[in-house]
Structures are given as C-alpha cells and as structure tokens.
Length: 524
Image (tube, rainbow, N blue to C red; front, top):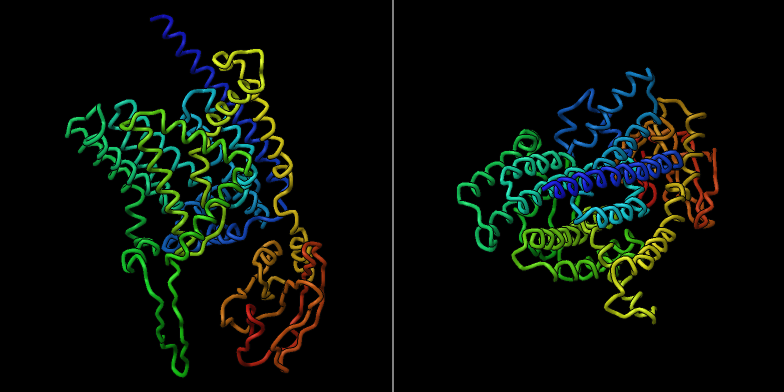
C-alpha cells in the first residue's frame, strides 16, 4: 500500500516536471515566433476586425461566423489597454497572437494527459511543439489552437469517463464541446463521440453501465453542450454549412439558374456542384499532402506504424481504441468534405488530427529503434535488443526529426512578404485616414491603418483614392482602363520573390459611374 502511494506520488511529480518543461519550451518557441513575425495570416485581419466591432455591434458579430476567438481578442485587448492606456494596430496584432499562444499552452496540458504514459506523452508533445506548422498556428492570429484547446479537453474527459467508469465526466465533455462550438463548429463532433461511447458501452463493452447511468450520461453530455452553444444557436441560427448539407442531396448534378437583380439589372449564375465523385480522390490526395506537410514528411511513417501497432494491440471492445478509430475516420472525412464541397486547401484544417494522434509517433519511433538495434547490433541477441538498449536509436531518431524541424521553425513567419510591411509604411506616411485604398491583400491596408476596399467583388463604391496592385514578371499595365480614370504611379517596390512587385497608384480623377478593371480587381 505504501509502495503504491509512493509510486503514484512519484508519477505525479514526474508528470508535473514534464509539463513544466514542455510549457517552458512551447512558451519560448511561441514568443520567438511572435517577435519575429513579419506578417499575420489573412484570416487574422478578419478576426481582429470582428473583435474591433464587438464594442459597437456585438449582435452583428455574433450573427456572423463563430465569435469565440474575436471575443477573446476583444476581452484581452480591453485588459491590455487598461494597463497600457494606448491602442494601435500592433496592440491588436500582439493581443491576437498572445491569445493563440495562451490557448496553445493550455492545450499542451490537456494533450499531455491524453497520451499513454509520461514517457510517451512527453516525447509526443515535444514533437508537436517543435513541428513548424502547428507552432506557427499557435503564434498567429488564428483560431486553430483555441479550437484544439476545447477539443482536446473534451476528448480527455471522454477518455476518463470511458476508462475510469466516471459517467459524470460526460457533463464537462459536453461543456467543452459547447464552448469549442463558439470557436469552430467542428468541435460539436465531441457530442457524436460521446453518444458513440454510450452506444458502444451498451452493445460492445465488457464493462456495461446500468441503463440509468447511460441515460444520465447522455443527458449531461447534451446539457453541457447546450449551456454555451444553445444561446448562440438561437441568435445566429444553425451554421450555413450544416443547412447546406440538410437542404442539398449528397451528390448534386450541374445546374444553372437565373437570378433577378435590381430593376434594369440581371445576372446569370452557373452553379456547379463541387462535391462530386471526381473530387474525392483529389481530396484524399490533398489530405495526404497536408498531413505530410504538418509532420514534415519525416514523422509520417512513424505515425502510421504507431497507429497500426496501437490499434492492433488493443482488444476490439477497448473504449480508447474505438474512440480513436472513430476520431481518425471522422476527421479524415471532415477534411475531404472541406476540400470537396468548400474548396478549402489549408493545412490548418488537419491540425486537430495531427494534435490528437501525435502520441502514436513515439510508438512508431520505438518500434523503428528496436528494429535498428536488432539489425545493426551483431553482438546482442535479438530478444535482448529492447528497452534501454534501443533507447539510443530512439533518441537518435528524435534528434534527426528535431534537426529537420529547426531550420523551418526558426524562419520568421512570412519572411518573404516583408515588402507588404514596407508598402504599408509608405501608405501610413503618405496618405490620410480618410483615404480609401483598393488592394488585393487587406493586410497591406490593415498594417497601414487605412480603410481598405475589397478588390474581389464586382461592384465597389466609387470612393477609391489609391490602388495597390501586385504584378508578376515585367508586366505592369492596367487593363480595360476607361479614359475618364487617370492613375499616377507613386510607389513601386520589388518584393524579391518570384519576380513580384508592389505598385501603388494614386487616383487623380474618377468617373461618375462604376467601371470594371482587370479580371480580379474592380473599382469605380
């Protein structure tokens, strides 16, 4: 009894030390990435603008996209302004990055305890910390890690509920799902996993719960989700993506329709289905590329080996095995749907799968290390080439992987877009806050602190004072420019990447009617 208590106390102390070490490394990496960031992500501008609108139009923000991340930025910025008594573009940027980093640090704690054993969890989370893409997402103005925080916390509660027979843990799992829903609607998948666990306990598990416990657990799960998500759904309604799935058949054929516009205007729209069988193989191909990029290709075979070994080793009715199998399958299908139906290609959408399966990588590394030890050591017998004797090979593989990660991790985020900041500085010094600027990339006007007009829509109000255009190659001409519009080139900068240049034009004379310029950029 005394030995058991001592062992548990030692394990807790070791877990505490491991978590502190991991948090210190993640904090150091995160601060470095924030300090060296050249440019935030495009979506980051949108999230900051949504956060800025919270003070004047909170209902409008809530009715838009999930408001959790902008609300966190808004709240954190309020606190920062209270202590600093100043607000600027960079204060908003640093606040957004700090919120993402804080959520990443909290996620690391939950992810550590999801892993099996302190050794496996330590190496798995260390690998996740050093992977360049997940690290950059955690130091950018993006909602990926806030989403991972609630997803991993809810997943941990479900694992505890299933493995420790704590049915009341379904309540916190539902609450985490509901909170995460305010950041990304995909976090509602925890509800599916919860009811799947209850169904598997009823039909598959050898340790069956009484019907009363199953019902109470299901009610707690749903109630926990409804507490934060219910009011939001009531105000904002069901997400557009879910409504599209409900209204439309699974596979749609091409169709066209005519949409009536204002009096005297009409537009013809050709609607083509993206979710067709031809897109599915392409989506799976993109999935393979995305997960390989996130794992820098080196860790991919070890992940596959670890998944195969771990899932094969555990019995068929093992709750954790069932939960992880469903999670992997579900998230693969989510990525395929996002690519096929909505055309999303970002590697960010694979992050939940990477974060919650990273624990299989050390398993694959251990198996590879044991094989290397048994084949390359001619002195030892194969049966003895395990455990501590294979650890040097395991450590060598870890060092090789870290060596591959470091060069990309140490590179400043979007260092190839330094010219965007230079152009923004020129606009800030040579324009006024009342000037309206058309640009293909909103980050330029955002960093300049100027009002930017979207260049992708077909009709834009005729209040453009400047136009920022990015040219590639030697071409630097404007197409379909009416005589009544006269532009003066006032600034040009070579970006030094793929022979691209930023050119800023000043609008000297505007016409009275809306006109079209080029294929993507439109202005009055």
